Image 1 (cartoon, one colour):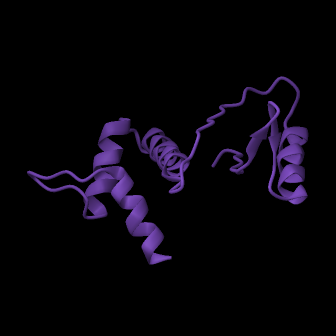
Image 2 (cartoon, helix red, strand yellow):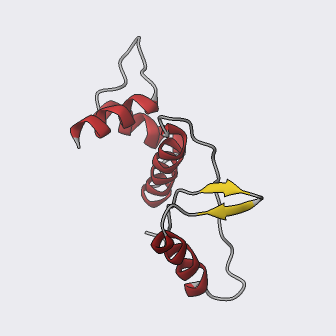
Length: 107
């Protein structure tokens, strides 16, 4: 899997503010460890109380990577994941966000 980093922070006066210094250090270390000129894919989402948008984006990123590895399109891989998770039925398709709720309840 590619190098990746997931952190949560807030914005104050136009700058990122991390809840703990260690998280800010983790963010800075990640950037410092990257070779000069590397291209980064960055997703920034504003989360509400539930915080499901970043989780959903991460799930979609993982499905996209799996699809590339096995030669499926994103939609094909997403359908397989939904079917295996019991979220896709013939007449009633549940959203991928339902998968996040199911996984969260399991933990």
